Structure formats: C-alpha cells, structure tokens
Image (cartoon, rainbow, N blue to C red; front, top):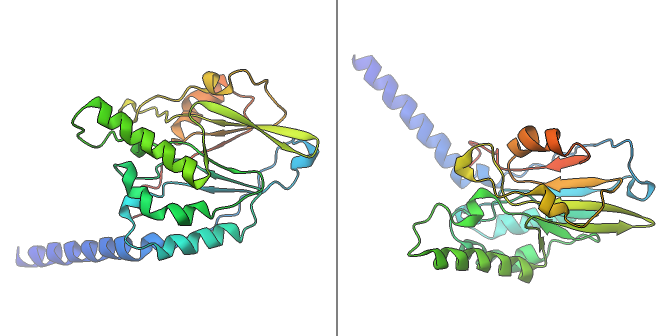
Length: 234
C-alpha cells in the first residue's frame, strides 16, 4: 500500500508539473501548419491564394502581451492574402480582449481580416445579473472587432474580389452537434441574397457543423475552416 501511495503522489506531481509547463510556457509555442488545398473549380485569379487561419486565442488566459506580439509578427511575415479567425477570442467576458487591441489591429492582409464567434464569445459561461448585461457584453465584443478592423461575420457573407474573379466567404454563428454549445449558425441566412459562386469558403467554429450539416445540405461549399477542438492544449 505504501508503494501505491508513493506512485500516486509521483504521478500527481508529474501531472501538476506538466500542467504548469503548459500554462506558463507551452501556450506560447506557436506552430505554423502549411496546408495545400486543391480545388478543381478554383477561379484563375485565386490560384495560389494564401489564407492564414488563426483560432481560439482565449485571451483571458494570456499573462503577457509579448507572445501575442510575436505571433502577429509571424502571421504578417507569412504574407497572407487573407486572414480568418475562427472564434473564441475570449474565455468569459469581452473585456479580456481589450488590452490586446493595438496588437491585433496590426494584423494585415490585402483581401481583409475576417472573424466569427466561438462558443466562449457569447458569455454563456458567466452568471450575468440579467439578459441585458449579457447582450451588452456581446455588443462590446462586436465593437472591439470594429476597432481592430476585423470584419465579424454573424450569419452573413462577403464577396471578395481578386482580378476578374470573386469568392463568397460565409461566416456563421456557432453551431455544434452538442446542444450544450448552441446551434445559432444558419448557413442559408448567411448566404442570403448572394448567388452561389465558383469558390465558397465557410467559417464555422465547431467542426461538427461540417460533419453533421454542411456535407449533407451544403455540398457546394468548397472549404470549411473551423477551430474549437484544441482540447488539452493549454
């Protein structure tokens, strides 16, 4: 029994050390994944289009501004044509993002920077005094996006032009197969009056949306970019 107790203490200590390493250091070890996506019907003007996707910043967990400044420099040095952010800017409340405003404002791309909301962005994990306070919190996040120059897409689309061609960028509210996370995303509403185009890219925070709705009902969409499943990365 004594050795069992010692083994338990050892493993608990090891788990704690790994957790603290992840929280203090691992969170800032950024990686760039270079994915080549082949789309057969790609319009000629978009050949070689460089999209940098970032996601799930959860700024309430950031202790220092310096790593984010380094990350933004790394993003800009990739010379993206377009930058997309696929949700979860904050953990709980919108004011977590405010001190990073000037840094995020420096993300640049000639075709624009676009964003959607993730499940954490709605303030669902906070006990608000009333529904109005919760609405104000979400409104404040929208204002934050306006200030940093990122176009927030909430069940809406934007046409992006390059040369003589265009693509439809569709951004939806959070939709998850798990009802706990909400099913606010509405692709039909997001497409709205826009005609389907030769190239359609969807931003949807939770990848289960692609699996359980997009592939079944919106097969014309060429590419879906999601975040959310960063599970156990601190």
